[in-house]
Image (cartoon, rainbow, N blue to C red):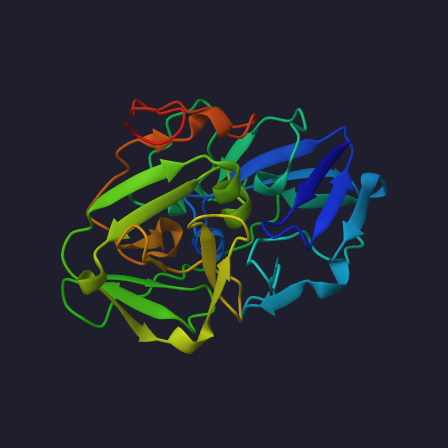
Length: 282
């Protein structure tokens, strides 16, 4: 039996195997909603899924394509569908507490992957979806910035937009359990810029701030309409932390290293050549 939880712990579920069809999705909609390089989902029989807490609090946003997105209204973590009559229930693997035993079987919508992310593993790739699967025909959600030469970003529903001037300071992949649950993904990819480089251009009033109780400086910011992760002013480190999945344009920087690999998801293998650190970079 495997349990799952959002970052704040208000929403909890459990499911049992056999697990099936663990997949990485690189479509722009998943990247924006999770704020990450890609989203990872794993399926199990609906009869083996059970809500433990908070299913009645889940927020829903439905895009123009009629595809709903679900998230915790307190911390912004992506959640399973609160009501699903399908025979197989898919859950965001980043929120799983224990190792479910499944491993990724495919990359889907690889043709839409982020320009700053390289697929370096041997898992099969599909430009959209494998043969025999219904093609979701997911339209891109990339939006150009209003300022020339700026790096732009936005949430999935487009209520929130922001821009960055100049080149970012740093880009890091973080595998800590907090980042994995906050982004509901294999890891967070964070871009850091100075306060003077960053500005909101629309919808700052829709940015909901969640500070994780007991944490010195960890928390999440997300759009209160669609639940997408958005930038966060980290006063204690003196920088703006930007979820790379929220970017609409190439940030002109690439990840420099992996941190907290000692806490990485058991189902995710690091296959690139970037330096790895058990906790923080030395």
